[in-house]
Image (cartoon, rainbow, N blue to C red; front, top):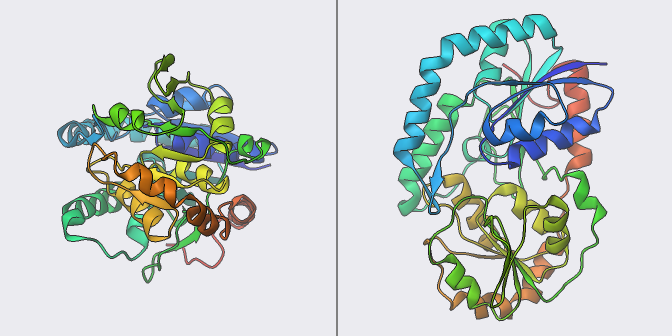
Length: 354
């Protein structure tokens, strides 16, 4: 049995869902999680958890709130001495053998102080560990995101980058890119090409989004609105992991923001995507860009996509499906094999740790 300290970014649910998938795979090991906000609420239902404030990316009306996000970082810096001391006491008490971080701020830092090997397992480092052709209009967002990731979240020993696309790695990246980790409930679903469209948004969306959905010539099952009932072709669904995955597995295609978890699950089920990235979030732009570049669907960068996109994606569904179904979007076996090696040897195979 190993003791594993696991830091998880708490904004949204994607990081915590991935971390739970990892922890549930290892019932023989003992986990102590460190998280905050949404992630803490999800993780502490099953595992011991230490709540620890972290910088948050705040979103409203489908746009990153830059000032509020910067203020969150300042609050983190103000609390850093006390939170660092608290986590060092937890390390002394828990005596972990290794640590994992999923885009969490404090755990890799205290691991450096304590001399504890720490592996980063997340998608965000695809931005900094890989090379990208960045369009001019995204250059400021790319630079800001790169500075944030490198300055705040890049002190782990090595990086296991989870991604549905695989751009070339930078030299000396100390990283390995693997296909996505999928949660257990995904494998309980059987994919079929139904008539409905699934619409999903993790954050408050732009005012024109529902008007756009009303132009879809199919029933649209909407998740993330905190509403129920029907309005025309829109069917508002309550929050439900099983319901979401069942409707995703059986939809014709998905319309969503470009979070990595929901896109990866859609691709596993063979579903084309129409993605609308959150404005100011370069990682979401990158996900959306690769959806279109690889022929898996369409992306649209403005807050309110035009109705003219709908017939375009409808007419190309067969080609999108063909492109998707030629690839592998499940990296669970590879990821767990690499994690086995890290837990045993305290280093990531084929990657030089620092």
